[in-house]
Amino acid sequence: MKVMVCLKQVPHQDARLDVNSDGTWIQEDNIKFEINSYDTYAVEEALRLKDAGDAEVVVVSIGPDRVTQALRTALGMGADRAIHVNDAAAQGADALGTAKILAAIAKEENADIIFAGLMADDDNAAAIPPMLAELLDMPSATGVTATDAGDGSVRVERELEGGAVEVVDLPKPCLIAIQTGANQVRYASLKGIMQAKKKPVDVKSLADLGVGGAADNKTTINKIYVPAKGDTAEILSGSTDEIVGQLVTKIKELGLL
Amino acid sequence: MGTILVVAEIQKGAIREASYELAAVAQELASSGGHEVNGLVIGSGVGDVASEFAGKGGGKTYVVDDAAAANYNVDIWTKAIKAATEASGADLVLISNTPTGWDVAPRIAAGLDCAFVSDCFKVSSTDASGSSFVRRVFNGKLDAEVSTTGKTIATVQPGAAPAYEGSSDGSTEALSVDTGARAAFVEIKIAESTGVDLTKADVIVSGGRGVGDADKFPEVIQPLADALGGAMGASRPVVDAGWLDHPYQVGSSGQVVAPKLYIAAGISGAIQHLVGMKASNFIVAINKDADAPIFEVADIGVVADLFDIVPALTEAVKAAKG
Image (tube, rainbow over all chains, first blue to last red; front, side, top):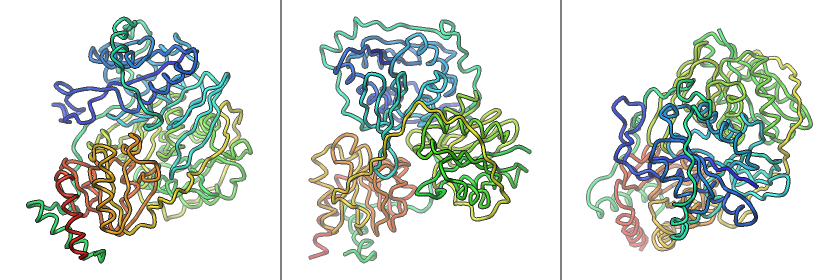
C-alpha cells in the first residue's frame, strides 16, 4: 500500500509575527519554522499504517529551501521518501493553484490513501485537502480523528460539533484530512534522524509538473493587519497583590464570594 | 445584477441558525447590489423545511430531496451544490463554516475551477468581477482582507452575522441530482456523558497551552476552580496534548458554556475556543501576550504570567471566604 502525506512548513507557533513591508503577509526572515501542527498528526497517522503492515509513506511539500528541513523531520519520524516542489513560481499560489501542484504529484504517485492536516496554522484555510480530492476525483473526509484502514476502504471518524463524531466509510483511493489530537505524534529518534539523511528527497519544479502556480491566482490577500482591539476589556495594572485585590472585588460584585 | 446562492444546513429537522445568518449576509449584499438571493436545501423529506427557508430569507430555493441524502454525504453534496450553482447562475455561493461546510465547500471551488475563501467574518462586496472578504489568520492573531476574481465559493464563520429576521418571496424548485456516492455514512456517535458537565457550573476556570504541562492543571488550575466552587475546563491544545481528557474541552467541538464567571488562564483565544465561551456573563482573561485574541472577548484582562496571578488569586479567594 502506498500512502502520500501532504505537509506544509509554517512559522513556529511562538514566532513573532510582524507584518511585512507591503502589508500582504508576515515577515518570514529571521523566524523559526516547523511542520504545521495538523500535518504532524497526518504524518503520524500514515506512519501508524506503516507500522501495522506493508505501507510506503511518501511525504510531499511545496516551498523554498527551508522546507527541506521539514521533510527531513518527517523522514526522521519514519517516512520512506520525500518530494520537494521548490519553485519560486509556486510561492504565493492560492489554495487551488497549490492543490493543482499536489494533484500533479499525486497522479504520478498513485497512492491508496492521501493524508493531510485539516488546515494550516498560518492561513487556517482548510482548503487544499478537499480541493485535491476533487481534482483527483476521489472521496474525502475532513476533521478526521480516527482511521481504520481495511482492504478496500478506510473507516474514518469525522469530528462534528459538541463532541459528536460521524463514522464514514471511504473506498480507496481516498483523501483524509486529519484533525489535531487524532493520535500522539512520535518524535524522530536519533537513529531515525541518521537514517533520514540517506532517504531520497526528490526536488521538482513546476515545469516538471506542467502546472501554473501563482500566475493563475483567483484569490489574493491584499492586506494583513493586527485587528483593532475591542474597547470592552478593562486591562488591570499594578502589582500582583493589587491585581488580585481588584479581581476579588469583582468576584464579590458578581455575588460569587 | 447577479445571484447569490445560500447553501442551508438542517439540524434536528430544522434549518439551523447559521443558515439564517448566511441569508442575512446574502440579503444585505443583495439589497445594496441588486443581486438575487437563491437557496439550496439538501436532505430527505425536506420539502416543508425548504419552503420555510424560501420564505424566510433563502429566496427561490432549490431542493435536492432524496432518501440517499438523509444523512450528509460528501459526494451527494458536492454534486448538489455544483448543480445548484449552475442552475442559479450564482456568482457567489455562501456556505457556513461548519463541519459540513469545511468538508464540501473547497471541493465545489476545485470542481468549478473558481475562487475560494474560507471562514470569513465579513463579505465586504460582491459583483460580477469578483468579491472581497475579511477573515482571520494565524489562529486569530491577524486579520486578512482577501479579494477574488470571478465566481467565488465562500464559507462564513457561524455567529459572524445575526440571523435574518425578514421574509423573502421564495418558491422552491426541485433539483434532480445523481445521488450515487462513494463515501458511505455509517452512523453518528454522540459523546458519552462522563459526569464532567461544564454547562451547569456557575464558575469555570479554564487553562490553555500556557499552563505548560499536565501536572499544572491539578496543581494550579483546579485549586482556583475549587476555591470558587466551580469547575475546571480547558482549551483544545490541552486536550490534544493529552493533559486533560476531552470532557474538559470548551469550544465548538467540545462544550459550549455560559457561566456567571469564566476565567481563561494561558488561553490565546482561537475562534474555536471563543465560540465555546464568549456568551459567558463575565470573562477574565490572564495571558502573557497582550495581543492574544482572548482579550477581545474579555471583560477584564490581566497581561501577566498566570503562575504569578492564579495561585495568589486562589489564596485571596480562600481568605475572603474565611
